[in-house]
Image (cartoon, rainbow, N blue to C red; front, side, top):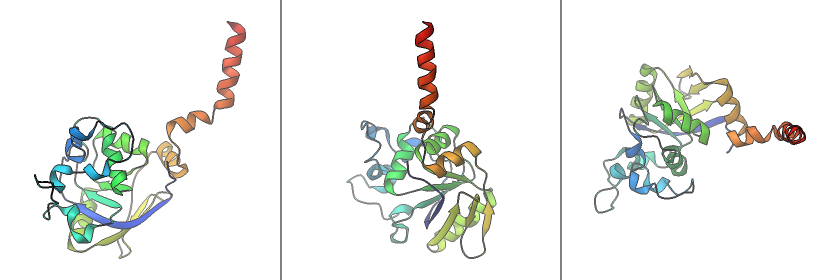
Length: 197
């Protein structure tokens, strides 16, 4: 995974609550085993009309939202079935962080494990950012080290993040890499157990 110290980029607003994982990445696209290539199917049923033409009324298809790397959403984002494909598709599309007042637990964990930063802010803060991003394109800076979100126009707030996950994201580690840091201790343990067996 890539290290995350700070994310600065355009923010797009998707003012919808209870967006489930089947809307994020519909089940018919889950047959791939790679982590890449899912971005083209993100929000497929909303982004496209039946004939495969882009839906001009869907928020992420608006010209001003092209190239956004931060997605602002409403509460309970990522609810529904458990699938790592949901953060994979958001990352592959180009998003590096999602801001919401709340996330479904499994989606939140899957995002952290895959290097997608889920940022939880107060409902009134998210409401402010959604309104700002719907009015005109906004640029946000998410500083993971200092746990802050700023818009460069006076809005600044703190967000909570578990210390373990903060360390993992800032170093670009996944759980396998954490285990491999203990390779010497694992080898010593295995050697000791071989002697006693």
